[in-house]
Length: 288
Ligand code: ZN
Ligand code: FE
Image (tube, rainbow, N blue to C red; front, top):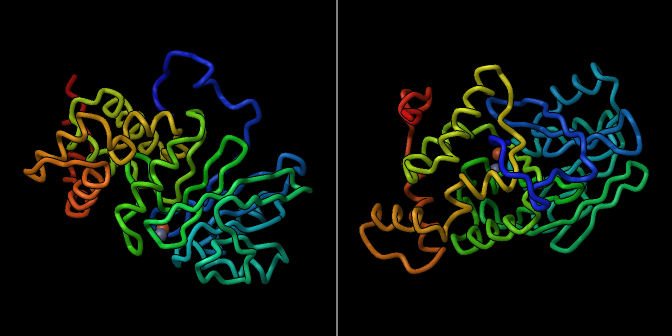
């Protein structure tokens, strides 16, 4: 979360928090463990791309696996499912229209995932764009959005269209501002370099960059973020802001009529953007 903001009912923290802890996997993935409110020591794993670090965490912390949530079919999100099922006979949930290992219960927009014994209930949202069948899990003031929304960025368009991704990001902006955003990759610093290239005068982004740098220098995740933060700093969640529209139009050297046009320019711009080491390590963004 970002620097303190003025208190108001809209940005008050959720009444019932969910305990969620990260397991690091591969270079920059987080496999989130959702701790059951009703059953201490029971967790649900979200997008376990690798079973090994999950099994180790479960063993070390004497946790029991109670279920597996999958957001989309990419290997870094599903690669550990079968191995986990070798150790734990648990339900797997995943998108209805994608091929997911472990015979998942197939979910689509409007469905609810209820794990009564664990005290967990999530709404399912269809959020196509990164993949064609990508879903998110929303509940308990928490959003598990896979590779669709990243802190200060969004997923690449591998299967979906710009129209779909624009609609999906708009959809993800609608839950209450205090909603905690659990993305599956630690891309925040690199994303912020792009965000500040697009919007160099955004003070919230500058502050958040310092905050994120401090966390990373201590080896801490920058996640979860919050929707409130993303609406302030994430260019892909700010497609209707004049500063973003102007920057995208200037970059494209043409007028942009719609949010989809702005998204398309930003996404293509970012696909070709590689932050320099100097940008990544800081200083130039924090001059005032
Ligand atoms: Zn992915
Ligand atoms: Fe991924």
